[in-house]
Length: 385
Ligand code: GMT
Figure (cartoon, rainbow, N blue to C red):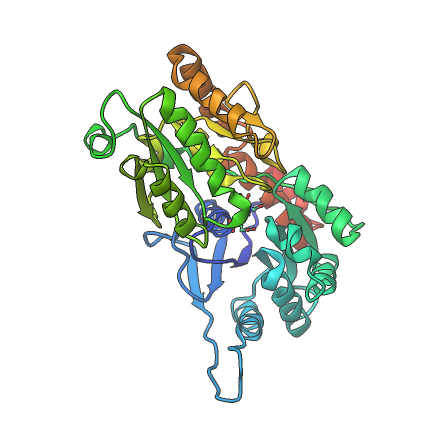
């Protein structure tokens, strides 16, 4: 007998890898027949069309005049508990420790021990906030009180242990892509609007924070463009974008760079690109590299954090030490000027995205964790049927 679960999901609903993973996972679970309830302050942007088994509950925050800051975290905790009681949820799957894991802990206190909490750690919730004295102890408590904890890479898992002295088991569950989203080939008319046939397109997609090392992206691009006529596409927005525009002007490259801003449908953009640049200082996983791989676009990046767990150096991309833009540019030129090698890398990336990081495989791993915490006695039955 198959036992379907009632799952509540809390995540950041706007652009960002953790929200993408949370939403896509929820959709996948709903397709499998589980009842999924998103509990967020706005509709997750990837939720898309109406789908059976998916429910959305909006968190409303009080603006009572006494409050200096709107109490979002408390409103979320309250809503998680409310929905859990009303819908008889089996578990909450919360993405990103702050505030979601902490709110889930509060909700569990309100609902009772039968409500299980699965926390997925994504990145700076540990690598930056885990060092912040104003949050550290609270994050440690929320992790220790979760019924299961997952990390999106081995690197993040180890750092969580080190930074927060966590001894409880943490499951490694990689991020994933749904190959169906990246199957469409490039649209030649669309590509022609950005680059001439003999030009290559280099793509960088991020939230333009210092950790992304945008100046390295520009440096790599300038070096590549010197040898191979190219265009650079920037997707996303963030604090370092203004400096980037200034730097690009100084280098006389303004007419080579396209600023696309925030975009929802990135599959089309990936499909018309030749390389992804990801020279980050630190990256727990680098979902964008996996998305590029799924679309047949190799990544040139830094061998920092969890990136080497996603990109196999010399097989589906090239990695170099953080800040070594000369080496990264040389790798980019090598791939762009050797069509046979490029095709090998592109095909290897697609294969890797469909095997090691397939939605089917990773969703199954999460599902096993759900059954382990919510139905331990039935776990074997549920999974074998
Ligand atoms: O942690 C963040 O800074 C934001 C977060 C996000 O929501 O995109 O990014 C992290 O989670 C992603 C999804 O698991 C990972 O792909 C990113 O590598 C990770 N960011 C960092 O580690 C800087």
